[in-house]
Length: 337
Image (cartoon, rainbow, N blue to C red; front, side, top):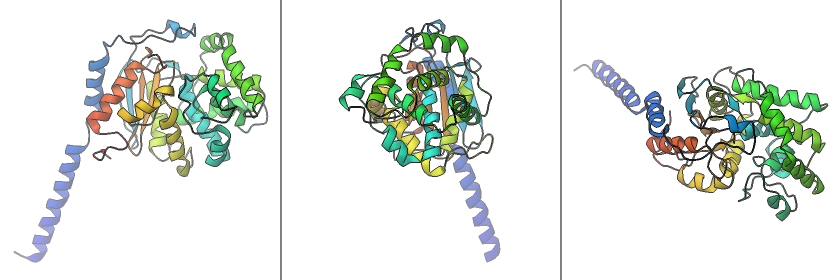
């Protein structure tokens, strides 16, 4: 056989074989999340966050899953159009804004990167460390993060935080005013935490102002699609696959994901990292965000929470996906797109 013809034939076979292999190994995300939805939609574990009156009105039956990939594809199932308050999910993106403004070393020095091993609103955690920064994903650290945002005044600080959320979500987000009002009426514990942090010089602005802005950012409504898009930014080296904007310095993404792995599920974060192994962040509004580096952001809404404040449905779905796709960050079989 002519050497040229043989070479072309071998090359063609190689390309065909590679394409076939890729097609066989690329997950069917639509099928996977449909299976997960069917598997867990009847789960009755957990309860809604009734300590915030406005959140007590959300149905524990609401359930939605969205995947947003780094190449801009969306896969979703369930109650995907139902908005819900971001709550602690918002902490990730205000932390990212602080990191973009100040760099990761300042965030480490002023906000910390250690798990507290205690509930997300613990005052004891602050006392035991004499106000030393723990992490920006518990309430005390998150309010300190708000106070660290560079701004001319209170209005400018809020606008910067909201604008940042909007561009990450590729949407125009709004505050759920009934939730905001309800939380402002019941946030005395957070006010006390802020004052406690201030007494240890771990607060970087006016406490009343920061607590109000923090409460407002937690009250921003979002859908699972918007949440998954925000996760896709982190999965895509800080660049949105949906609006093309570089929203976070690529070099800072590992530090944001590290904070999520350390404390994203509060005092359940260690067990989460051990069993599921995907950086994630939960919120008591029932949302949970997870980031698979280089692949996708995953947004889930399930208002019924476990005792630590994490979405039961979200935890179940992500554990299922992690095992099915080998997504654990330390799994040697981890699939990559």
